[in-house]
Image 1 (cartoon, rainbow, N blue to C red):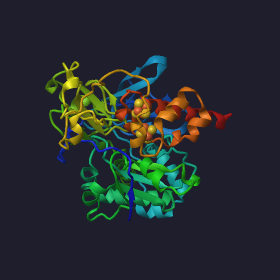
Image 2 (image 1 turned 180 degrees about the vertical axis):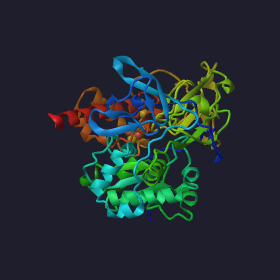
Image 3 (image 1 turned 120 degrees about the horizontal axis):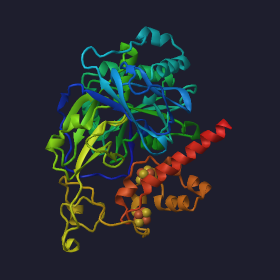
Image 4 (image 1 turned 135 degrees about the horizontal axis):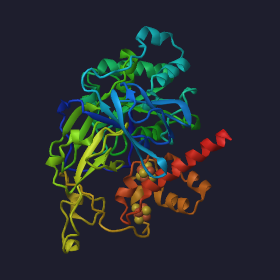
Length: 453
Ligand code: SF4
Ligand code: SF4
């Protein structure tokens, strides 16, 4: 096992982490899949309102590659298809048939068959079962091409972003599935598989399992697969590595071993304003109201799905997206404090040394207040000091604004792991991360179009 030390990043001291308690929630009456939250795909609907569907029925495919299918997490009827501006498909909602829920059975791939299948055909089996979405390719985080053998697959047992589910919780009682998933990856990538976690989680994750290949020493986002890849890759030929989360690997193994679309996943509910902070086993695409009772909210909170730095706000009438495994509930933050400049700020979570909280190691309440509007860059270099992939975000930002494509590529835009730290620490409130995510996506789209003409 190798230890990788990553010096840059930031250690958060934020109140509201979830306990390791895991409770199974009842299956909700309605579930949904949110195509607009799946990056880099163009959905083509395969169902209409009123259609009967089973767990595992194809709801939509990707226009970029029609082999990529996205399956229903519930059996029943299509209750609604919500469209946004320019007919973007926001949600496909399924009313579940609560008793005797219909389900598709897929052919299983057991260990004996696994050893006989060629890697290329193994990818086809996964694609045919609608599970290809569990893989994503660096640097764009899009679905990889199943016809290619990846230079490496990284399995991320990461949890440093506040507050993602703990790998120790979702790995419990799933060791056999996880081990089978690793065998699948070893076949797919010809044994070039990296299983990594943060040093702080090593004891909880690896005791008795012995699955780790890399332990990562550092703070957020050192345990992100993109960050690990940046620090361990040995050449350009490894640039297009794939990654998968530990939890998705368990789902993949279950689909192959049981022949059923695995619709349960572990979700963390956390944040200082969450009435209960713990882990839940819930149906994929569950309504947020199942995870937190809206009656227990005061009305001045924000519900953030995904992590606190990379997530999105969603209303309590929303649903969990395909890749979303965390719900953070944080205070919106009240109006500006009177004479706040003259207060020491012992409990203000901030990167800046302006506040006395710099010396406070106790967890602090994180709210959504921006503390001011966007201003011009003051060249403080905070963003460069924390960037885990050694970018100079302020320089890249300027090159992006000037549309200097060659310059921003040379400055390493494609290395950006979209962690959001630069935006968090920027005293000028510049939306660096969002700009980089959008620019990377536009560049990826252009590359795809150039390949198809
Ligand atoms: S540029 Fe910003 S979002 Fe990208 S990796 Fe660096 S700190 Fe993270
Ligand atoms: S943190 Fe913000 S203000 Fe400071 S150098 Fe970076 S972009 Fe400029």
